[in-house]
Image (cartoon, rainbow over all chains, first blue to last red):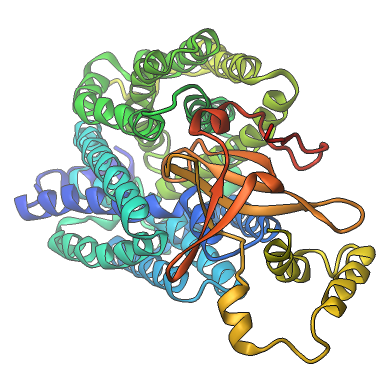
Length: 413
Length: 143
């Protein structure tokens, strides 16, 4: 028996308390809420503050670039931190402060600072949630628990989109950021319900805690030589290359094609997939334990090119909303299976969160290129061609996964 | 109408064009010279001049018609069109179109000025998307 297996066995008997598990439910829910305003809505807010398009574009570009650079250090930091909750708490406070800065002082310098603060905090918060989850329940039970996380995150996303959207529409764009800052408080309260003693720092890193210097942890170089991690990263990059620009294109199409119900229909395009994720994520988490990871990953990655093809084919706004339900399938699978596969891959390395950072970078690169590429295609050839191009990238991700991705589920479970 | 338009045009030019297009500076000083020689009365400035960037636009039937996010000027520095962003939800799926400057009306409703675009929402939504690198497609109003 290897050392990490012995350590795992020693912790296996320790079941997390109900309060901690409930705390994690609410924490994932509120984290989804506080992240809503920082998306494309920031650009809307800045236009209301008389920002020019050049400045808005610059701030967004700085944010994307910082995000690409920040993911790996963010994951590394979570591995290094002994208390994952404390890292998560600092990140939530960072996001709250960032929201306040944005609401109170929309000058160029403060917005750049707020954006960088938000990017840094997010690059810690993402891995920290998964680390707390793995630290609470351990590898054997992490699949279903990630499913539950994804459900609560999706409910948070869906509700926040509705509430924040209404807030921005009926009150003011600024109010959205005040609401975000206020919501950081219940986020912290939920986090405090997760007992420090229930989160095993060794389990949370996928084996060996980087703090205990006596145990050598895997280096970034060794991780990058893991073929499963590299293939997953490539597939995730291609997935987001296909996925990121799809929703904005869909929304723009709906805005153009529907007169009276455009706003409601675009909202439906955003919220419907979240309903699907909320409905099916726990099942996905359960199935991952019995079917293994590969079949589910194939379903999730396969759904994306199908969605792209259907969007290229249809013009009807109501049909577009219906097609968006397929996005929920991809969303649920990626939300559950990607961290789960990473937990498999990083098992015994003590670098679970660093692998999340690597995948986070792949996501960022794919998403950034997606927006640029799709904008280019849509400008030159129209949105149907753009959808088809995005679908092609999604199909490539699917084929790569089918041909090369190994099953990572440990045989013993 | 043309005088009141010039009143709005002056700060607009000052904000967006002065540092970019040299002829606009000449044009601007020309316009200011037409006003009384002393500095503008501060109360007059407060009541009659207003920044247009970020201003909400209404369509003919008082529907939400989006927001002015940029202004387009010709080589003489004359503002020819406003770029309006509208639609979408939470900033996702918005569209940008360039609307002929003459299709915009500024009307006072008590305290605030309201910008009304002489188009319907249906005309707005099907207008071709504005692209910064290409010559703007400006919707002219057939009056």
